[in-house]
Amino acid sequence: MMRRTMLLAVTAFAVAIWASPTIAKDDEAGKTHEGKVVKVEEGKLTMTDKDGKEHSHMVAKNAKISKDGKEHKLADLEKGAKIKVTVVTKDDKEWVTKIECLKAE
Image 1: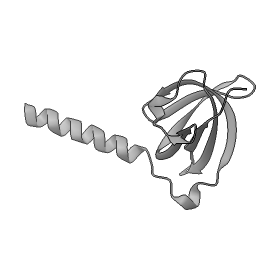
Image 2: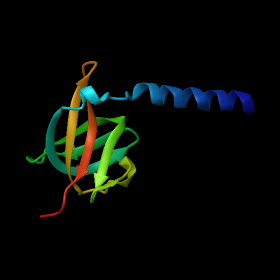
Image 3: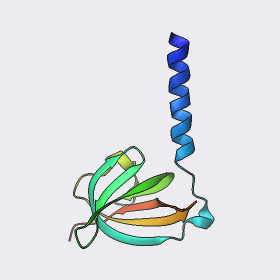
């Protein structure tokens, strides 16, 4: 029973890693837009744009996330934080490769 549970856990982890691509440096020159954080989940960011429309993005596993010049994790982003995201298209899907927390105005 323990081996089966361990096998399922390892398989789930492998699928999660495989599903979130590593975006190569050559691919990082994407489009950017600003908005506010609505919520974050494992590998996913939901935000509003400047018009207040809500949308979601998948976040690449090697995405650079920064706040006040320091590296952070996706889970560190707080609801309502103003952000600038860089999005690239890979395999017909859009992926966030960079998230910068912006200073409040």
